[in-house]
Amino acid sequence: MKMFELTLDSYYWTKDQVECPYELLVLLKEQAGMEYFHQQLDHYCLYSLSHVMYDRRRVSEVIYDTIVFQSIIKLGYKIFINPEEFNRRNFCEYHFSEKRLQEVKYLDLNETENPYIVFENIFKKHRIEKVSKSFFNLILAAMADDTYGKDFVCSVSILDYHKLLEACKLIQQRCLTSER
Image (cartoon, rainbow, N blue to C red; front, side):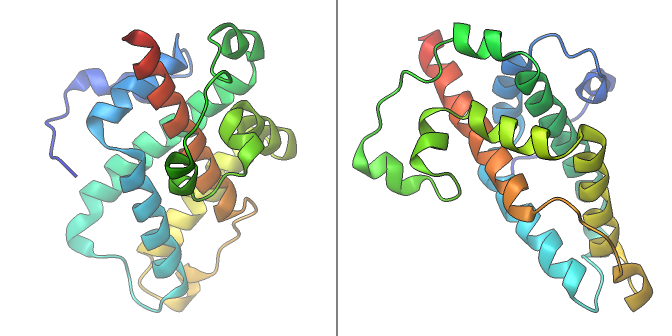
């Protein structure tokens, strides 16, 4: 991951009044790619099951990642509650090569063609507060240095988080393609 100096302007990532989730997705692509967050999510899962704590030297990175990941959850929810805007942007009218379809790891063909399905499946099944809280519980377990701290409840599937990241990546790519 490239290192960026964060300014106080980064506070808006966590605000509830993000005006355009699609613009925020493009900005997030510049900060860190979704592949990085897939990798970090896997690390957090492994450390939540391990008897050791996630690397103490990386606590500031975990805090940064958590803020950005919470922003991804919020913008996914913003997309979910406004399907008209998603449809207006024609994000479903993309054709994929066989090579590109093989790069998609977590989504089926329908979800790849229409990433809105991912947001719909996640946020109809779980309230946004539950999605956020489960992620925080995962982080707390990964950062715990004893067995007692590793005991946590993650009521949202890790696969759902991976699907959320992959759907956001597809939308990022489609936003950048439509700007050209």
